[in-house]
Amino acid sequence: MNTIEKYNKYVMKSYGRLPLALAGRGKHSASAVGEDGKLYIDFGSGIGVNSLGFCDSEWAGAVCKQAVLLQHNSNYYYNKPGADFSEKLCEITGYTNMFLGNSGAEANECAIKLSRKYSFDKYGKNRHTIITLVNSFHGRTLAALSATGQEDMHNYFFPFVEGFVHVKANDIAELKAKLDDSVCAVMFEYIQGEGGVEELEQSYVDEIFRLCSERDILTIADEVQTGAGRTGKFLVGEHYGKQADITTLAKGIGGGLPLGICLANEKCAGVLTAGTHGSTYGGNPVVLAGATAVLNKVSAPGFLSEILKKGEYIREKLAVLDEVVSISGKGLMLGITLNEKKAADILEAALEKGLLTLTAKEKLRLLPPLVIDYESLDKGLEILAEVLS
Ligand SMILES: Cc1ncc(COP(=O)(O)O)c(C=O)c1O
Image (cartoon, rainbow, N blue to C red):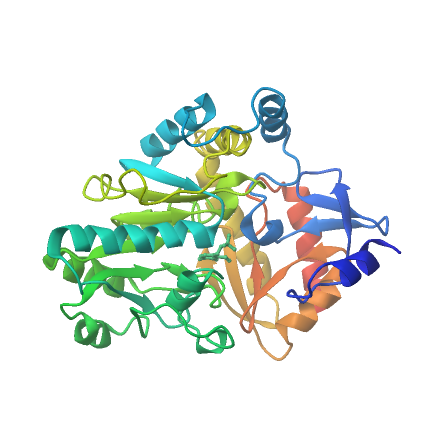
């Protein structure tokens, strides 16, 4: 049996996979070689995870060095990669402290628990509702799925977790109407990634922050997809001039190893006390050694402005194509609305020609590695232009 046949026999079919088995890194960090021997340009980063591309030498070096030094210790003890990483992330973001976990869903679970406990500690029972947005995506665990504002995902797994109310994005009147005395937090993606690269309006974000601060309701920004430089700022909230009480990160911050983070400001930093939350693998030193290499690169002078430049470059090249109606998103997180062609068909045609892309709802979605070089960009854009024409 080959790789694909083994997967189909031994791994649950919970994903709609494409017929490609990847073997390793290509010539550039933004290209990979398939088991079929073909070279693939990467405009997807493993859904925004491989922020430094395939097997970045500094990231891989840090991971390998740590793997032979200390691969894990329980959270009863401390380790240096965890200390250095958390210090640097607080310096970069301005947050006070963090909980370290393993995935986006887990980071959001922590944010949900933290905000409910914040409210319980201060106001007692029954102030536990979390408002989230229609079309949001917060993960696949039961609480994260309950938070997710997509009705078609609320199936099969009943009963879902109580206490989530979904409101229409950018509808200030509905938000105001739902902000009753039971609400402890409002949770949102500034740009809904899985929801189709849909950006929140500035005025709506302003209102979320104003209304929440008036009533001591916490703001939770899910930056699992937008964070760690993806949009040309370290956090996409910076584009809006805002910092939520809690921000969650995952995907790109780990550079390819599992890492989920719940960042808390001063107000929220002391809420989760010993015994109230935990995760066996959370804060793994190998993962954090790699993540520190990601932070070092992303926070280097000029790195983020390059992302904005590359994003503009892609937009300019695509905007002239007849099939492209509009482009949403920021930096290297782009959603392309097509005229007649279906995004899923374009994705398959591009794969056939050696380009990895993504879709989000009806749009074609691009999340290239943040370090992508112009040669790879040009080659990928050439393929895209060809399949779109
Ligand atoms: C905004 C957002 N939140 C949460 C998640 C869930 O992350 P994970 O799959 O690591 O649990 C995702 C994944 O796509 C996401 O895009």
